[in-house]
Amino acid sequence: MEPYDLIIVGAGPAGSTLAKALEDSGKRTLLIDKQDFPRDKTCAGWVTPAVIETLGIDLAEYGKGRTLQPIRRFRIGMMGQQAVENDHGSVVSYGIRRCEFDDYLLARTNTPKQLGTPVKNIIRKDGNWLINDTWCAPLLVGAGGHFCPVARLIGDGPGSHETVVAAKEIEFEMTHDQANACEARGDTPELWFCKDLKGYAWVFRKGNYLNIGLGREDNHKLTEHLQDFVETMKASGRIPAELPGRFKGHAYLLYDHAGRALVDDGLILIGDAAGLAYTQSGEGIRPAIESALLAADVIKQAPGFSASSLQAYGDAITERFGHRGSVNKEGFQVPDWIRMPLASTLMRSHWFTRKVVTERWFLHQEVPALVANS
Image (cartoon, rainbow, N blue to C red; front, top):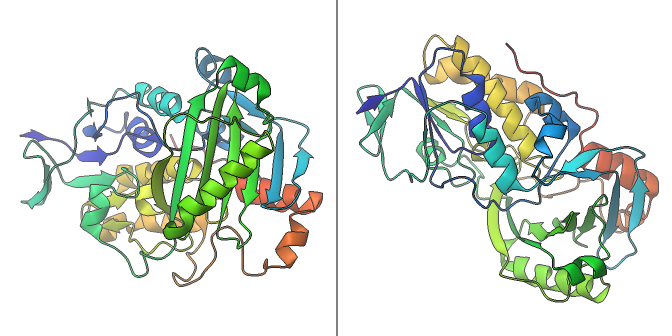
């Protein structure tokens, strides 16, 4: 049996960021993930300058041999209407491929790793958590996404079965002919809101790679909405007529509606395992990175790993992201004050789509980057 001070389950951006942040803390840390890296990860895949700054990524270095698509414009519309295109005048985000991005972040940490290792059992024994009868630690950190096994230990919070966003998407490298014919531009992601405002779809080109997807609250209608969207995009030339493979699904909780507790005795949840995705956009990368850094600060200073000792992390999350709204509150992408037919009008407005939808909901430009404490 190998003892550690903490074990992080999940080696995506949240887990790898936490591991790196703890490298000089003296904490013996183990990072476990069920998959080997690099691995496919279902995600539209863009990161804001705030994420780049927080992680200290050298863009020139990262761009060598990896996809790094500068984004200067957004094309936004409501399905069935003409889209509005806004030019932001400078680079406001970067398109990445998660298989490359996550592998890059993981490679930056020297923390011991057990990859390709599914968590088969977790047992509480003598104040420690024992994983797979092999590794033990007094603290477990859940960083394994919505279905993280550590999150199951804390249990579902009230209303946690409401507003679970289900999404399907596909990412593939276009052929030469497809790339030439594709109307979607690399520097201009397209966002298309569903008419009932319960989700949105996207077309996002990154060089010769194309990512297409749709996320909604109601899973039972997801396939129907996706098929309608794909056919519309094909007919307009926005995407190729022939798509390879099948769309992959994933799920996550929106911050304002999640009911999961963030801590318990010897347990912390970060990233999507904690249900931190931004309520208006569903983006999870920035909240994952920031939650990892906030958790690192608490882990370094906590006198122990009881729920009360770790509650400082929950307080820090609330201070950073705000108080969670009512778990019974409806609405995925838009606040209550935006409802039909007002939404239809607003989505035709250059000012609204730029200042509210893009800069506030998707880019969070009003929120300064979180700088890691040394």
